[in-house]
Length: 117
Image (cartoon, rainbow, N blue to C red; front, side, top):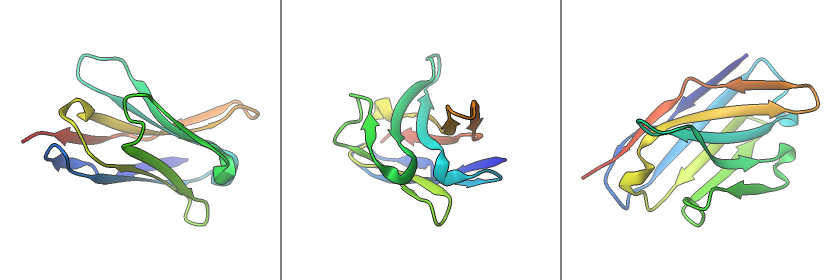
């Protein structure tokens, strides 16, 4: 099983980034996909979630209206489009796959996002 994030980097405030998470080794379409983030000295927090088959999504209040989660089950990939980035969005972003029925959860290795002028 692998979850491989990409797309992080350094961006100026107000800029945009698109994170990708490529999955392999499990039935991607049957898993809820989530993005978490962890800033230095802070606990890991949930940012966005999308259900299997993309039926619904939800977001942390701090990113609503700025971030969009989506998935492409044909490519086994989940995305996080991040717009209007703020310095407080600086963190390591992690991809998570969860199937509560099977009792399985997988994590990616994380990708660094730094928002700074």
